[in-house]
Length: 271
Image (cartoon, rainbow, N blue to C red):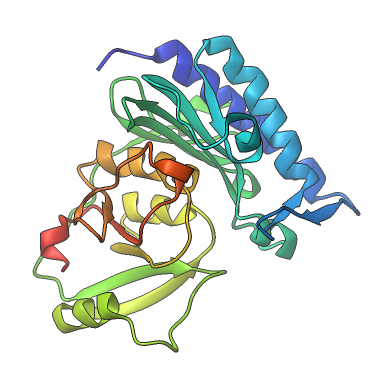
């Protein structure tokens, strides 16, 4: 893979700048909330974050596909290299003020996520895949990376024989009342312990060994998964399409994902 040190450095700056502005709005007394055409909420923070990220990433000369700017692009993907951005993933968690929202920025080449950044504004923490394919965790307490507290993350030790598995589920879309064939299969192989976590923060749990499986059986878009997918791929895992049991493909019509499992474990060890 070509090195993208300049581009990834700019993307990290974009995430930090957007995170700082998001927290200013988060801590303010009042901000506007409205419904988009798909009936999902959007706030001032979504839109301001999108504007900041687009402005910074424009310096790379690489096309930007963003959730909040998708109407400008329609349902087509750029060819070759492009950014895929969710400027505020977990808007419902932002509104609920539980801190479980994040910024997702992914760099894709030929529809494959080759780098990704997940920044958690409320914790001033970010996770990133470097230009050399290494995964780092950093803190930005004052709007700048604290290099003394930046650590490379290695793949957690995974024991396939371990029967207890932590399954991460969406905080806003978690349902246990309906029979689920995927959960039924997992329960036959493992003892499952469920944890609800908002937004793409679930991917950071996986790469730090705080969870084993993220299962999603509902509506998600490519910008929801690409950054976390890049983090997982860099450590030998991925997001697996449950229609094919192969790694999730990007560049799909309408940007819509199928149901999936994300894990550092191979799919054939899970299902």
